Structures are given as structure tokens and as C-alpha cells.
Length: 120
Ligand code: 5GP
Image 1 (cartoon, rainbow, N blue to C red):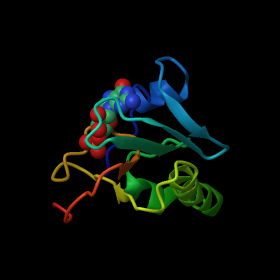
Image 2 (tube, rainbow, N blue to C red):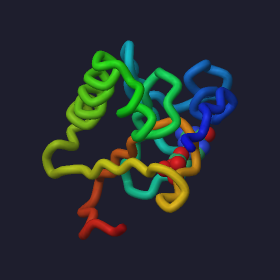
Image 3 (cartoon, rainbow, N blue to C red):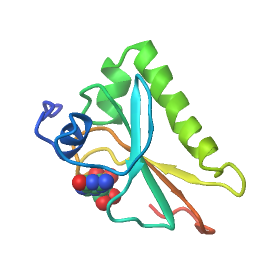
Image 4 (tube, helix red, strand yellow):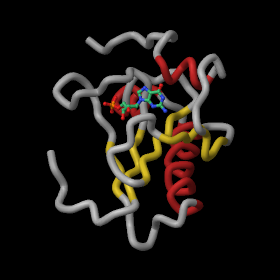
């Protein structure tokens, strides 16, 4: 069964402004901020503003406008950061086996060095 959304998760608190984040982008559908524990020279997280546990939850229940807005925002963040050349990597963890720690959908953007082959 799908997990219910926990409104006390850390990214919900960031969205409500209850805890600070190092924001790089915000629009009607998305917020982007620097990861607190970067795994690459540049490591940004992009989250939708809606209450979705994961990519699975969002894909199933998000409106077309939310999904389109979020996908465009992810691209915009990377483009604005000048990452398109030489490139960047997107990653989303979904659930236990993927080691998803925060139960609010987030897409990781990694850049700033050659990232090597994809590790699973
Ligand atoms: P996950 O394993 O859920 O895909 O990744 C969660 C990410 O959130 C981790 O990379 C972690 O460093 C980051 N993170 C956890 N708590 C905070 C926080 O309070 N602020 C920020 N900016 N990032 C966080």
C-alpha cells in the first residue's frame, strides 16, 4: 500500500518556510534548493509544491499542470545554472530499496565534474 503523505517531513517544512533552505529557484509548481550534504560539486534538489510522497505518487495523482510545471522547472533549474553543457545527471529515489530518505518527491541534480558511469 502507498504511504500516506506526512506533512511534517523536512521538505514540507522547507516549503512552509519553517526551516531555511538555500533556494535557487521557485515558481508556482516547484522549489529548488541546494542539498545540505552535496554528493557532487553542484547538487540541487527540485521538489513539487504539492504533497506527493514520491515520483510514483506524483505520476499517479498529480494534475497535468503540476506535472508539466515540475518537469519544466527541473529543466529550467539546470539550464539557468549553466549545466546543460557539459552536462548533468537527474536522479529520483522511490521507496525503500532505492533508499528514499525524505518522503516528499525530490529530483536530485548532480553536476560540476565528470560523473562517471551510472551507478545503481
Ligand atoms: P533521498 O535519499 O531521499 O533521495 O535524498 C534526500 C536528500 O535530502 C539527501 O541528499 C539529503 O542530503 C538531503 N537533505 C536532507 N535533509 C535536508 C535538509 O534539511 N535540507 C536540505 N537542503 N537537504 C536535505
